[in-house]
Length: 363
Ligand SMILES: [Zn+2]
Image 1: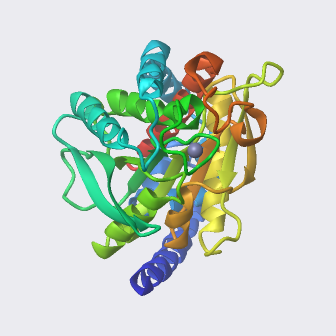
Image 2: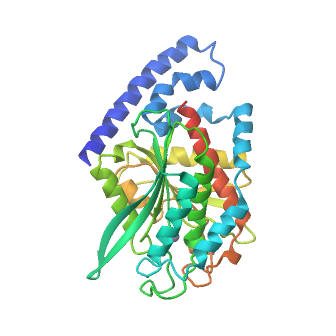
């Protein structure tokens, strides 16, 4: 924790120094600077420290140049709604993914196996033990890492994208009841699988880490244990951003395009709030540039981003408002046929485009 604070302070001082130098340069070169690429270079050192801080200070770069947009559009075309649907179907076909059920281990192995076909040999389990009501549970988060093969082994500029894979029925203590959890949260897990499938073939400079959490419904067990594990390895300082998917497949027929971008305001730390709002506005712009989605900002609710925020990270949550709008929420009726796959496809594209654009700042 204290190291994290120290790191944030030194980051802030670095930003102020870089900005001062950059603004002096800017006044000298003002007449010759056109757009984008020169500014990319000028701020490159700042972007290497923190992608988010870099966006925060160069809002003009949010105007995407036409060639870059074409390149991104081509990659977005790879997002495959059939694949999303198949993954949602398979995950929902487990009788339940309740964290205390006998099925959760099988789900974890199925996911690891699936990720291994997409992410080669960079997949591993993060095993953890949770004690609840005098019972011990041995559980698994599943991680896939995509690194730039040419980069040094440093973990800076890491973006973590997560979703919980457990589900629940109406009675949270009933681990035997049918709980397909199609919207909550097979939809978010499937978006992650699809992002991994596409991004693992690209040469990115960002370090991407995809994490599937267990135990969210029980109280964010998996994400709490995972962030503590990262903190224990002194790695939380390298996290530029945490993006969370929790329910991205349900749309009432009268609001087909609305998606919620949750940003951090208050909570445990206030120094990360500005970055969170900046990235939410950035993603909103991406949604309008690349998809038919109408993104709306809202304050953080309660999901796996909370443990990340508590350790000072910049976080963002993506969801479909299912908690209030999906009549099947936490019920055995949360099945794949109630979802809008095109909508989930658009949300996957929105975050894919976000990652691609953030990666460009780093080049
Ligand atoms: Zn959920």
